[in-house]
Amino acid sequence: MPDSATEETLLLVDPDLDFLDWATKHLAAKGLRILRCDDAGKAIKVIEKTHVNVVVSAVLLQPFDGVDLLGRIRAQSPDTLVILTTGFPTTGQIIEATQKGAHDVLRKESLSFELRPVVESALQTVEDRRSAERPAAEIPSMDGRVKIIGVSRALQDVFKLVGRVARSDAPVLISGESGTGKELVAKAVHEYSPRRQREMITINCGAIPENLLESELFGHEKGSFTGAISRREGRFEQADGGTLFLDEIGDMPLSIQVKLLRVLQDGSFSRVGANDMLKTDVRIVAATHKNLAAEVSAGRFREDLFYRLNVVELRIPPLRERPEDIPLLAEYFLQRITRKNGMARIRISSEATASLVTHHWPGNVRELENTMARACALASSQILLPADIPLAAAPGRTSALANGLDQVINSAPAEMPLMSWLSKQVVGHLLDRSGGDLKEAAAALGVELAEVKKILASKD
Image 1 (cartoon, rainbow, N blue to C red):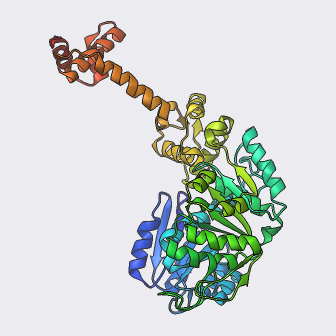
Image 2 (cartoon, rainbow, N blue to C red):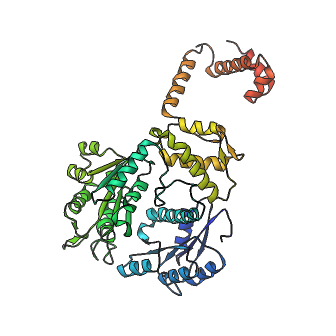
Image 3 (cartoon, one colour):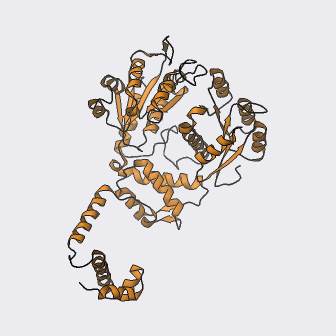
């Protein structure tokens, strides 16, 4: 069991102390305890004394390497997830690590944008395992595979399309605003498909520099560019027989789009620096928050690639279009957050739920999750009231407030300082509300009684 019921435990193992410092800061999060050591022997001693949820370990270690460490951890603590990091993992290393149960194998050069999401995914896997051990029916799910919360007709229509399209190998384009859950839908397409026994590999096209994206997708030969010290398989080779999820496809550079088009046409590609053509059998699922038709018109996205990808489109509706899903999602996030942080159960009042349902949610489900996390952190009791939930002003409300303020300011007399006039208007309003009670008006403003009298005595 973990040393603290309120924390998950992450162990970093690397001989590079500078890397340990960077990774500790990069991965720091509430509810996550980070331990660290610089060799494999020390790591085993930590595992013996402490239950560790996730280990991030270098392959090059002393007195034995990271793959050997992986095997020992799995034998001693089968529930611990291990992520290995190395400069340029060979095919043999990846196969051996996978056979021994590695959660993932990451290249050192990509850790700045891959490490945090992979660790978060591993911690979510830990949480999902814990949820699976609890009585069912607490949290809705799609047949226990991918948790997509919702009962709205709009979302049910998406589920139906997933069920139909998953059986085929046709490319799928998932569209929707940021934060709507496009990656969850992509996972559902994969997990309900005949390819579910193989891996779904995800790559964010907008998070990787153009000069690295081609190598990331298609691989490279030794010496093909500075730093290419060995041959490397790309994501298309690694995903052979499975699914490749291209997130934020709208951000893919035109130069890479040309090469992707060829893979979609006949399944062939070449590594960077190679002349020979390779074949792959990969199902492509792409996602974007952009309007790709508009991107085509603007010349930022190839028209032929757009039609190749857009064989089946799954549009994920924004949260404001499915308000009946908001109470379910809020309750789900409350349960997950309080369990993860070892907190007593927090309930949400009907008034607070009503305020959530009427909110605009420009950040969609991701914004709702963050809002519930803040509400839990700031809660003063076990029942959330509307005042406990920090909601950003909707665009329409912001403009209405600005328009009202403009009207008030425009009505101020030119001969009187604006702040003095505004202060007097506010005090007058408070006196009307309190029946002329100066003390009550002063208390509402948080000032002394003498200050209220001074404001009232100012000349019009």
